[in-house]
Length: 391
Image (cartoon, rainbow, N blue to C red; front, top):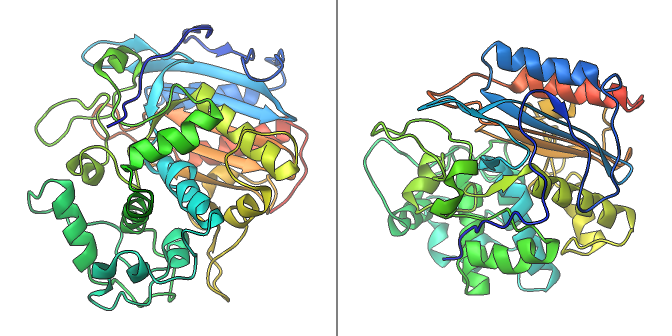
């Protein structure tokens, strides 16, 4: 399997201590004002001092530049304290879903190898048991499939083969189309479809068709041991082993570390690059984003079943109870996603802006909620950018 390799040449290392950082290797450098974003920085500092997360890396993008960066706290608290840095790698958790898996699906849709409204059984015939025969790819991508949130984990199953069997035989939690239920099984299934159609392991497909075209050398699955010192650990597993460079999500871990719903490791530099390339493609500017503009537009606009009020794009969240990273001021056309480990990315094409917040809030023993922190950072960032949208 393709593994994430250490490539840090040409990158400047910035240690923690509340530093506003603004020099980028892929955009023009912009010197941010501490005063302009002082309220955002204060939110981060206060949250970390209150124990909501060990540390954080924050980036605000606007008008094709990173206009503000802030690094504060620690990437590890145990077995010893280690300072957070701009180069710290994070387990991106469910940010894997829209950034990698959904994009992979839409690349295959764009090539005519997949069709959004085809039933899943066209590609995975065994999936049709227990009332699932009417579920389409679009329903998986928008979380209206009716599948339960996750595979059962109560018994000690292990291995990808067993995970696939459980996906194929999973019962429904409610009828398809009926309501929005966020489900990891949806994206595990989509990952299996990408592998079936491409004849490649999911991590190899992503490396070849997404990470390489975007120039994201710090991102990938299954990080090599040499990267461990710059990976933010998450929490102790069921055996008392601290997870560091091993995916936090228990289902993805049982599947070997590569799955459609989780498994990506990345850093702030690469995620900013991704967000900017996406914005550039949507705006019709030159971009390395590996999808056509009209296809990308489908991903980031409402695609849920007619009449439903939980708004989802194809992989991306638009307006649901998970949308706290939008804050109060980013536009109704904005979209994003969160990750359970404490990551989030929110993108607003109307203002040509994004906010990336990376924490390992589950470290070392389960952590605290950062839902309010995400909301407040986004609201204050938009205010500091001078935005006046109201959702």
